[in-house]
Image 1 (cartoon, rainbow, N blue to C red):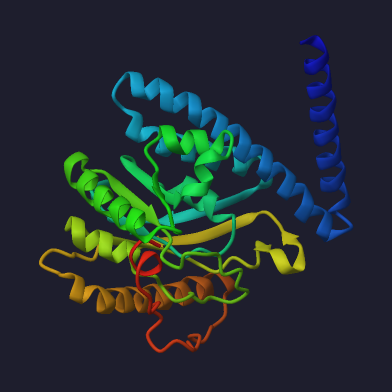
Image 2: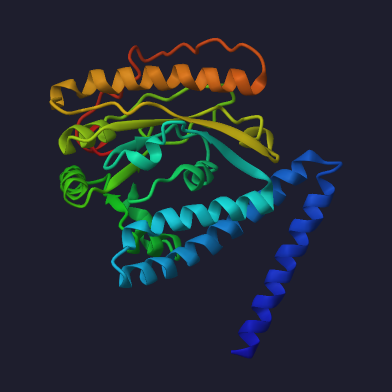
Length: 303
């Protein structure tokens, strides 16, 4: 046991030393800062995921397990702020994050840094959805399973529909909100844009009869741009838009609902980015006419 502890201490000390050296080198070599913050972010995620496992177990004893993702998200927010200098500044003057429940919260998916965005905006009594394969990932998967994450088996359309149906029932029964990324994958875009939206989040909202709350994030390639190995400290603007009611809507309305929501989010994303950069930005063109994925089965209903 003592030998194992010794090797862990050596590895930890080496990891810290390499990170500090990279931070110092970043004063002359900007790319070094990219790798330094990357190393810190991985450790922060591991620490907070481990913390989340224990928090989930502890809160479960008091019947508050559904708040464990919120508690873990907030921990990640502060760990990242102190270690990388990156934070998301949230504009929510009407407190939609705190007063709209249950709801389907949606946001653009730019990079892996969106995990930190969740840390800054994640509401109480809310859960994320995730692909089923993440369930087996040590620490992170354990935490997600213990804290009520809705896992989607994208390879099985029957399972996916069942998971969405179960999520809708749970939202109604427990007044539980869900946070989703309707693009389904990261865009890594340098300028403000949105990939076509998949319709799973909108089907879920209509099925559960709950509002959709768009959470718009300005493009932050000035903070993190993976292709150029750029990762610096800074603040990223976020704005919570007015909830969109889905009562009395049917599955036939989902495509229009998806398109209209995406257009509103894209306009606000351009506005936020323009204000942050201090210069006008044109609305991007979209090759897909309405920006909605035309698909059936898992891709359309559970992404």
